Image 1 (cartoon, one colour):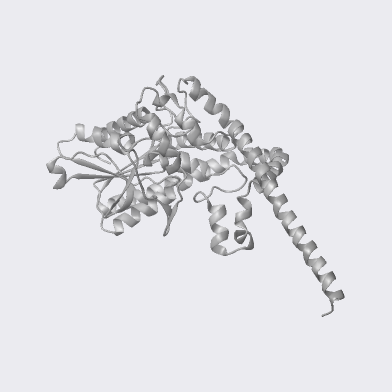
Image 2 (image 1 turned 180 degrees about the vertical axis):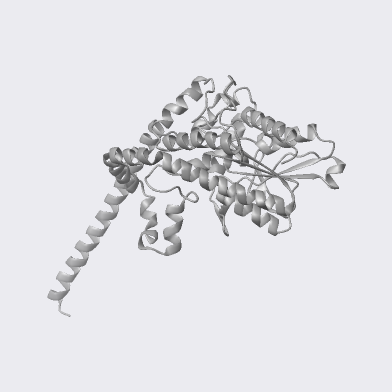
Length: 389
């Protein structure tokens, strides 16, 4: 090849390389600027859950709180692990305050149970199912609802009650029913099963138009399983540039979208409760077949009820008004209260804290230690008053 022909090729590739490098630099700068804008906007409009939780007055006076909140945000951001049928499960984690222990039934959050000798012989086995509020997000092992429940049930029992926490963050009742079935198939035989749901089932109804989702993250997981082109480019959706573009698109279409969701609120609420009660009917059929008592509770939430609010709790609903999930959750809770009163298939606890003046909530749904203690007391009292279940 002559020198004359080499020069144009060299110039072409030099120009191409310069253009590619320029695009990469521009993309990096755009992403950095988008990250800065997104971070500021999120902190002002929707503070991170862990940021809200750590400043809740529900922890005031607790000497362990500062140390606890040095580790809890890292745990909350840890990656989820895939498990068959239920899609994800509990992540391995061990620290001073939060421990997920491996046992013959799987990897589960530690519950503080009594260590008496009779517990090693034939304890009364209690299985608890739910989402993050049952798991105990944002509280130490000793302050989860199952740990308080173990304390209360053992205080009023002549035998030894051992509570197992099968709560998984993000679970809805669909996944919990599958988990219960798996544990029974594996040979587990509980004396009592407790379901504690509501907020996740309501949230899965979704802030956008359409029927309720069967579980969270389905919009990400479904395309990946199907191998769509969009799923292969899923990493682009995680960029801050894409998030801002999506937010801007949502801003301009919000009015139409809000009208659609408002028109569907009742239908979404009815569909959510139909699904929830169907799951309970299956669970109760399993209880009859495997000879265990079953109790089902619809959990409290700051979205609903008449709790006297402290200043921190008062600002949470104000934040929630900018969250489209608030409308859905409220509608579902209203339907749940009506169903509980008419069908009697579960206990509605939406007004549990209506007379509680002290700080209880650490965000719109999760409870601090005192909140979990009060909820566990009510659950234990109901179980003791209804031994025939």
